[in-house]
Length: 186
Image (cartoon, rainbow, N blue to C red; front, side, top):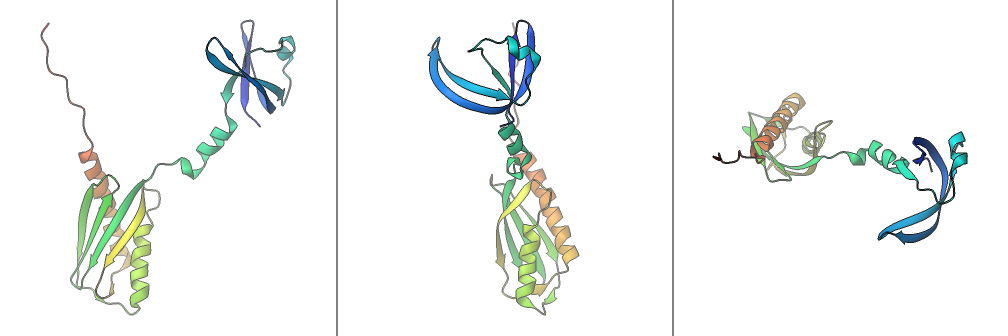
């Protein structure tokens, strides 16, 4: 399965990759659980021919673990919720992280009525969901807009960027800091 194993033969450590590993049994030794495997290496190092049966092996490369770390599921992203209030004269954008840290940024209008109201609101929602390579991902977008207004994408992107920067700064400020120990006299 591609896992890396090593054995210590006299004072030399010999490593190899396993092609097939079959569990042959379980037992207890000195109060610790042990397993017995049949291992077929990809290539047979010459030093392995000096091994005796039941020699202990050490695992030094877990192929499945390495593959899991390469996937995007290994990334940690912080969920945020957006609340948008869109009026003719003002757009306010509130971002709340999953830890409860919240910031609000705004953009002054006036904004004209959108020619395609449904498309304008969908475009606003889609733009807030797209957070790119930031450490955040959008969990929810709440729109409070009695009427759809046209807001240029460049201004929306700048407002989103400002909100993300403000949220990052607010999260840093909200992070608990370790205090110094009280001064002692010997």
